[in-house]
Picture: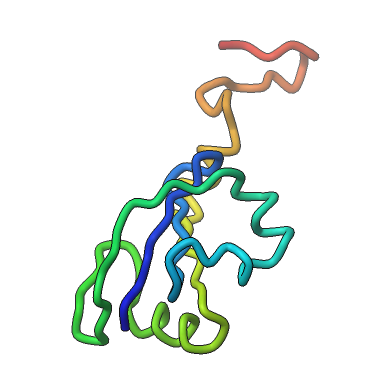
Length: 100
């Protein structure tokens, strides 16, 4: 299946795979609002035999044939760190201030 891959400029390591180039009309509005601006990164012929580093090609193909798009997100660990801008700070339970 011929695919077009876009990267979210708002969410690191988050990609949208689509069956049509610039087919943003098929994406749900809440997803569009969450991802923000998308940048085209790749045009690829995806087959079940193709090995991908961060997702399963069968799962992507199933979603593409079902609704025309697939959302690839980073692992839960990466998402947790990305959503925590001060992940290297500790909270002292005895004080109300955050210590670096």
